[in-house]
Length: 259
Image (cartoon, rainbow, N blue to C red; front, top):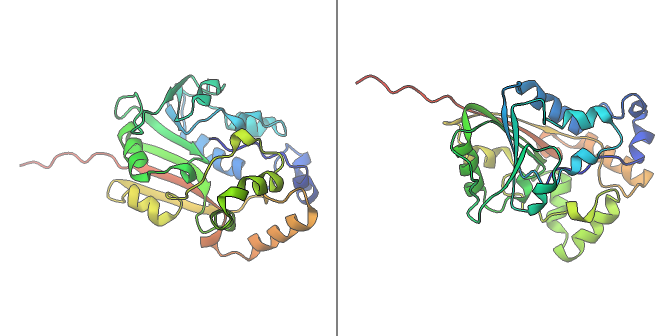
């Protein structure tokens, strides 16, 4: 379920600095993965939650961005979890596993230093179940790093308002570079700071969540539509930005108090 590569030719029209490295000054993938990279070490054991087939690693527009997203060989282990067997084709994993029908992974508790989840939270149908499993897998002191649409951003709002019968056709037209196999139903049940605090309660987790607007993604390669979305993003208050950058740290276990 990873995000597809952002290779629209329209981006270079409005962000000419793409010629220097293949990414813009507001590239959301760069912003997210730079911070993830700052948290990993060679001994890190990482779980990619909702790893999918690894579409983000097909990015042909920037070798730097593609390498930034690939942790295989740079950390101790990368395990991919998903409900779809496409995860077994993901080239960036050391090991791939399927979640069982209850959402549980065939892994022991406290086995991960970092749980990475890129463009997956919006597809989670049962946030209580998924958050409990992430809590089980994550070591105390470990991080959940997720990038996901903001439920109150214009992309998520439009997706929720458009009838499901025509939303796939509209999405394919608005984002022509995206492959059909990378389009999944979105439910947005774990996509606000409030719901994140509900399912990852502050008593157990420290929250470092912020909103972000990257280049417009749904523009049908039309200059006018692109410019209109740029204006919308410029005028949008922080709480309604399109993407949430989610960094949540599991608190260390408190030692038992002496009797």
